[in-house]
Length: 147
Length: 272
Image (cartoon, rainbow over all chains, first blue to last red; front, side):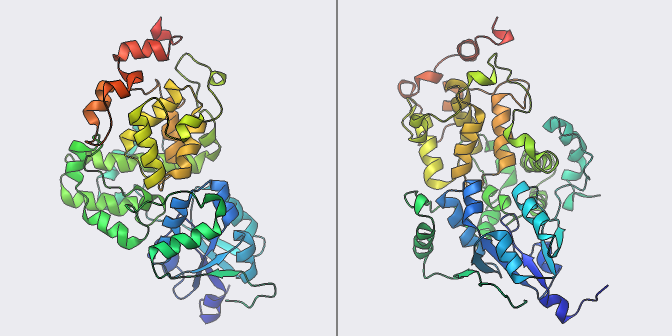
């Protein structure tokens, strides 16, 4: 097992995707000093069917972040950098998850979850909102959603 | 970063002389979207989000959130893209009042958490009917695509046209306006919720497949026990001063709930 040193930082890339556009997302803290990139992927945006307004909003947000912006296919651009490790934010988005799965063929991909609303775990009833709410209510009114 | 052995990817600029220059840049990158308007009200970035956070009044929100000019936060696009978290918004609300005073505000944040949990567990559910319609109609009775007059804001209802224009031009709609417009598309026009959901997702800055589609399914009744619909009296009660709600311009909705139920859902069991 390798220890954290400068080489590791050079071999680690933070992949910032559209669900984590914040400079203090935990993925940034997990790899201080590592480079961060956002891939401006026209085909992905077309697949998500984002209008011009949304694309402006996302780009405007990127301008305030410590990221380099590259244009191209997300997987291809990330593979081009050939990092040993890719750190990125956890997301439910199946398109982004599929890209992460493909990247695992060439890099170690670690996903880092953002702060949770309630510390409930996954075993929550989701059939109707109020079943979820009955479980979540107590924690939802506590700072950081935990006792 | 490692040296690359293949062609380096195209680097895009990190700064622009003005917002207009950024918009021009994106119009050039996306010729197929070049004709779409770009709103001024909701701008990207943490600094803009910070201004919105500073303006949050969680107690007033609880009192007025259903009114189209109520004390809503417009934080949803920032939450959608992780620019702010549900956690920090909730923590902010807790500083503003006792749990009872900020209950509605926190509960609305919880809806987002609920939708995201469904997204994570069953992403395939988002585009399929989770349950059958409870409207007396079958899925096949609904049209597959959005009628042109809806896309063009040329429907017979002035209020709906107002909401459609707002959606397209600003990328934002008050939640109650979304419910009205979604119900109009699905129940009055009998269009599949998926067509309405696609339309919303294209334009909404906060468009999220989970929140958007599952809310549409809630309106449609494929993720609820009954369909959501409204009447003109309700629309007039919650309207903003600039919402065109005159009866003459919104005749489709000018009836009692019972009469509308019979008109919209004549085959539903309760209509017998």
